[in-house]
Image 1 (tube, rainbow, N blue to C red):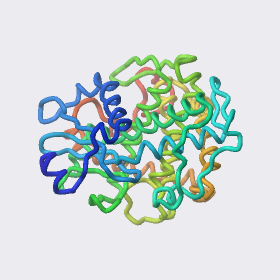
Image 2 (image 1 turned 30 degrees about the vertical axis):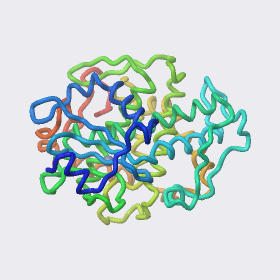
Image 3 (image 1 turned 120 degrees about the horizontal axis):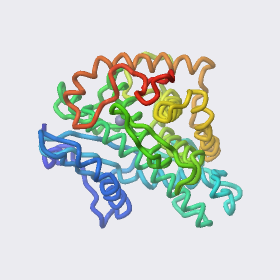
Image 4 (image 1 turned 90 degrees about the vertical axis):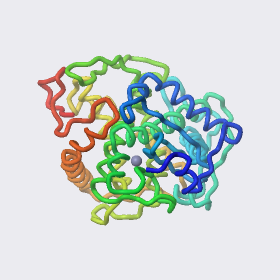
Amino acid sequence: MPTFEKFIEARRLVICDANAEPTLVGLLEEFETINAGTLKFYRRHGGPMALRLIVVDKWGFNAFAASLDDCDVIGINRGVYGILLATARGVVSQGFSTSQFAGNQSDVAGRTVSGSPKDVLRGIAALDPSPLQDDSQDLTAHRIARVAFHFMLFHELAHLVNGHCDWVGLNRAVSLICEMNDGQFEALEGLERETLEWDADSEAIREILEITLQPHIGGVGGRATWSVPERNSFGTPQDAFKFVGAAISICSAYFGAFDDNDFLSNAPRTHPHPVLRMLSFRGATVQNLAFRCGMTYDEASRFTSPFLEPMRQLNAFFTRDPSVSPPSDIIEIKNARTRQYQHHWAKLHPELDRLKRGGMLAPAQPVAHPAFPTTKVLG
Ligand SMILES: [Zn+2]
């Protein structure tokens, strides 16, 4: 593997410093500070993990993770946070509301962008970078954007600490995973790659559920249990699911912007189909609550239902519908795909377990939670 210096030089990457990108560099530093307690447990070649978070001087919605000779790297494109924040402002202006915040107070008509997520990333449609008139609306948009940004960082971190990048490097010159194929990095495609993305998504959604629900975390038999408080700084748990739903919907809209493959195509892919991916995010939210709180799937599904609300506001923001109309048997298609991921996960598990940087991977075969052995929820 190349060193950081050689990698940057070979890929002709320009890194933004804190003078050029104070907000983004500040957010990366904040991520490292908040998660310092967790990050210090991750290993690299027997020593502590040497993680570098960098802002790449490039427009567009992209991120990558790489395991290099002398450090691990997470790179985020310069444009990412601006896109997240402008879109979150659009979602808030379209009526996003929580128990603490009524929404739609000043920008009554609601903002729109004249196009689809693809049009935004192609530069055909421009996002409004200005703050919302109402301070509490704008603060809410900032909170959504930060949750979305943390989701992206946790997703990239999972590619590193769960051994995904090192696994890619077993057969390639560079141990690297990139989220959008913009021609800068070679993309690994196929069901194994999709399975790694599915795992990184699962880790990242658990992390942002922890950020927004702020549960009391216990542990039984090495598996975490959650006790969710009735209120926290995000409001009620239902408010937290709205923040998570808004953040994930925005990320999904842009990550899937260039994906035109149909649902049943067997063409090799890098990521799950965007619509299946969004369904998996919803499924993972229900799964986390059911598995870690000892609920039934039905109870968890009802409890987390506000997750879906912000999708309406996001669709109203884009004047060209970003979503593809799913077929009526979409849930069966998604479940069949998940079974394929579970199959590949079990196959990849021994190697990833050897390559992981600490902690525990999700088990090769899902099992009942030791704290709730009588529920039928596996994880
Ligand atoms: Zn990924």
